[in-house]
Length: 252
Image 1: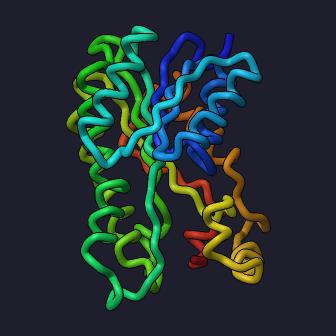
Image 2 (image 1 turned 90 degrees about the vertical axis):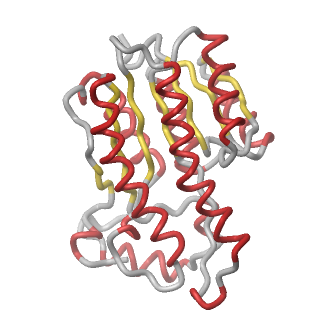
């Protein structure tokens, strides 16, 4: 039997990159998946790939920074499939710029998508996850939460907040049998990340990674599937590094 057979998952930022890989991983293990992404075309493309592989998914082209949009989408998902077991938060807006250049509108957008949306998804979890069966929330943080990274002050602050929120929610939602953990990917050259980093930068990071290679979206998805499964039933408040050892070796 597949590890997530019959369960229902809601995945944000699932139109591309790591979020997409996590959604595909959940579906491959038997979950029915809500695909949330602000880009309707990429959300539908993820749904189509899941359906091609005989899985079940629905697209939700929403702005996850909006509380009403998140709650409404999860309401619709539960209305169709009858339950909610897993939420995976991956949506992010990233800008690399000196702190002197940060403007209010960009800062607010990044915080709203990268941090506030996790609060809205926690509210959706409390609304729909069965108090006896419980459920799982998996957030996406970053080594930037711990390392100093020039030009990434807002992003680093957001990811620090994600790690902190993960621990606080684990304590608060534990009595409802909701486990809350975070994955912490190292360098993963997704299409979006490649737009901001050169091949030379990636090669330097590969050389500084003790395992000698960069990560893949599938590496992160495998960890998320594990955290969502019964195999991780006594794991909560954990930030799981999937980084080939680069964080502890001092790479960034």
